[in-house]
Image (cartoon, rainbow, N blue to C red; front, side, top):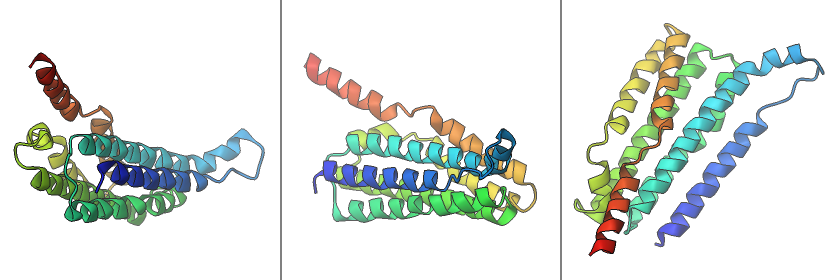
Length: 199
């Protein structure tokens, strides 16, 4: 399968998910600034999820950019990732509507954990298809962020029932770590291009 088609499909799904989330931002019925206070939790949960979707969109793009071979297994692994991402709007709305209550917050963590594991599975499937000497394999073999992030989620899920602030802070911390762009694939491909040019 052409990887451009896979990327276009994934981009479309992520764009729809962002649209669904923003539609959950209901304006207050009172035309006063103080009425916005009631929608602050919903807005904050939207911002966090928007950042997470942006992170996945960015890294997914770079991963496919370094991929040459797309197998049937990769298609299913990609759908598996999109399945977990598609649950984000529901988890976001539930968390925001309930002002970051323990159960919605923990559920949000479960969804983020599912997304992280699904992304790692897709990465492994693509590396298996493209080989251990592929540019993708060379670029991500020392990945620390993707290995440590699931542990933050695993810690944050039970913490939601103890202290919602600490649990939420862990979700924000992972997002902040990933907001800094992961340049490994770009550097690898840029180095490959330089070698071709000089050769």
